[in-house]
Image (tube, rainbow, N blue to C red; front, side, top):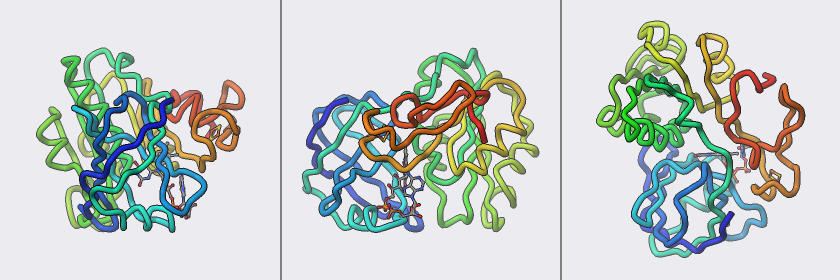
Length: 242
Ligand SMILES: Cc1cc2nc3c(=O)[nH]c(=O)nc-3n(C[C@H](O)[C@H](O)[C@H](O)COP(=O)(O)OP(=O)(O)OC[C@H]3O[C@@H](n4cnc5c(N)ncnc54)[C@H](O)[C@@H]3O)c2cc1C
Ligand code: FES
């Protein structure tokens, strides 16, 4: 874990209530998520790393409460304290050749960085994204440019398959040897029960320290209690007690 100051290079509305935050700095680009200090808030807020290279890190976030609403008001040039190098991320090596990535909403963010790693390893990558409506869609062009196969579902049918991400999966019948999923718990539970074979999911919990000290993010797993921030957020399918 490293604490670094980054400068906001961009903080832009890119979809419904959704902002792209580009941070420039000298820190590490390792880690599954970062913990951001937001002016006026004692507790930091965790956001997944969506992309990272050349001293820049890209995050996508939704304004859901006071913290993210204040974050959305921060202009380019603002200096922001970032705890980085946090979390145990997706295991790209667990996939032997054909990966299936399934996201709901902004669960797409950490899967983009994973897709880049898998492609760099020469693996075939299928991506299936689900959103409520077309105004919420993010990363569609980026995934299409990177991956071998892509499908989309929206709940209201305004883009792609009408329905849940599981409906798009049933329609696509993708070939894979390992799957990765990120999004709302109810969606990941449905994905894990639909998909056969091994896989892993990225969980979310409210966080205090974000670095393994306070045990505020503890959950029960098949292997006993685990901290989402330190032992996760990514857990193997069979470890998760839904
Ligand atoms: C490992 C991890 C990675 C995350 N990555 C992203 C990301 O890439 N993009 C993104 O938009 N969000 C992400 N989140 C969720 C994000 O941290 C919360 O949305 C944010 O902290 C809310 O802060 P707030 O002050 O705006 O909302 P608050 O005022 O604290 O809460 C507003 C509402 O959001 C809910 N909420 C707050 N925090 C969480 C949480 N951690 N999980 C589920 N619901 C929450 C609350 O229950 C409440 O209903 C991630 C969370 C974790 C744990
Ligand atoms: S948030 Fe403190 S241990 Fe996870």
